[in-house]
Amino acid sequence: MTFPERVKNQLWADILLMSEDPGRFAKNPDADFTRCRKMVFADLLQFLISMQSGSTKHELLKYFHYDPNTISNSAFHQQRRKLLPETFPFLLRQFNSHFPFVLYKGVYNLVAVDGCEFNIARNPNDPDTFYPSNGQSFRGFNMLHTTSLYDILSKRYLDCVIQPGRHKNEFRAICDLVDRYDYAGSPIIIGDRGFASYNFYAHAKEKNMLFLVRAKDINVKRLLNLDTLPDHIDTSVDIILSRTQSIKKRLYPDFAHKYRYISREVSFDYIKHGSLDEYTLSLRIVRFEVADGVFHNIITNLPPDIFSSDDIMHLYRLRWNIETSFRDLKHTIGATNFHSKTVELIQQEIWARLILFDFCAIITLHVVIVQKNTKFVYQVNFAMAMKICHDFLRLKIFEPPPDVESLIGNFTLPIRLERTFARQHRFQIPASFCYRFS
Image (tube, rainbow, N blue to C red):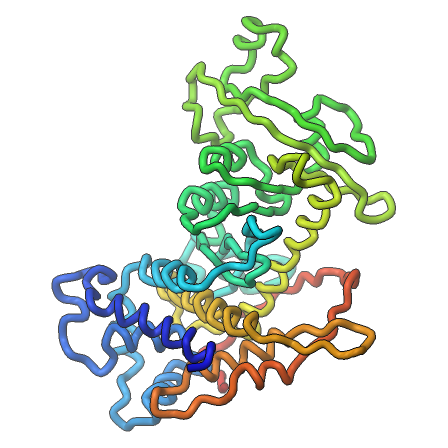
């Protein structure tokens, strides 16, 4: 059995194991998935993971090999509405647990966190996701926001929080992701400026997790009690968090410079409002130059005897891999082509696409590229590899599989380091339901 076949069999085996007790994943366990239907529990999950960007009816016809008795769109949506929201998150973690992750220095999992937005079908009657007319969209649009954990070296998604666009809160999302992180190993959470908060640092501390987060100049000035920042910093600071602004400073004047006040409007889960409790944090601040006159500030708890400032600079640069993964998730895997207007069902499809992404990544990273005596080092064309893996996943048992790894190895790209491009901010409407073809 080839490695791609083993990965595929493992994913289907996890789904079959879940199908032995479908009531555990059903909204109404006493009735849902108890009758014999054309699309049973296992078929439903397999179809949602492997479906492509065509219309719902076209995808159903392909899955059932153009059987004239293929179930209707309505029957399919009735079946998928029976699933609990926890179904696909459970399958994602279960599937990931079977395959080891690539470790940094043989010890650490490099885990990037970032947000991503998905435009969904327009619905002005949904105040949680609808944005009225602005300079980019004259009719308004609806949007969901995801905050994901992504293993950089293994190119796999680990977890995700999906929030309505109008109520997105990345500070809350990262704390929830840290609290429920249950993978083995020693993770280093790497985040951009949207995740720098005392609450996140405290949640990571309570879970004994390492973190590395970029921060704004104003945040670092407050931490260090400085009016201006030097060009290069690598120092540690001990702070005491409190909900009272002046009492502690009067009682302990020698430590007044260490106190940081947390107002009622700021979330901090380890000190209640009105409490006199304190919470201590030890943080390391690193500042370095990335371009002429451009500096990055990093707040971390990485020990300086193991991670130098150059190591921290290198780790933060690796964070960009999650940005490129969003491109593959949306456009190569097809996570922008939803088959429903209901937010709950759209969330199902996002989770299903994360599982499909991980399936493709596990197979792709197993492919060995033979390097030739050329100017550049070559890597797998990840977009082409995903298309090959996706088609391989859709094959039935009786269909002979191709040599997946050899096919992937035929499509390579040179690694061009130090290339930079201006980020393009473009509004994109979701793909139409009626005019899809794959």
